[in-house]
Image 1 (cartoon, helix red, strand yellow):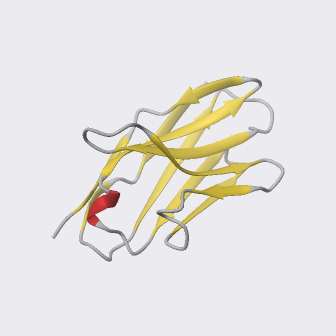
Image 2 (tube, helix red, strand yellow):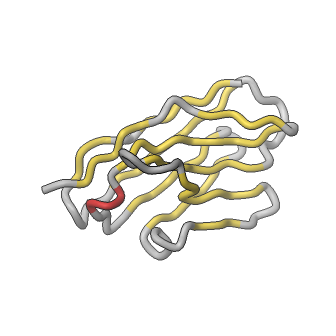
Length: 114
């Protein structure tokens, strides 16, 4: 199983970015697909996740600004990030739980700065 993330970059405060993460090597519906982030000097934290049942969780700090979605046919999870703030600056990692195993993408850097 491999995860390929894309979409990071530099954006001004108040701007938007959309992250994508495509999974390969899976043959069944992926149970959990999500995004974590790690800012410099901080621990990795959950940003948002979507469960195959339809349930969605967001970190309180991004609720109302970020939207997670998934396309099961494309085995892809998206993170639409709006109203970005400097404190959203971090490396963002996609994460899936598939048949009891956890897999991580390579990380994509998001920098929010003027």
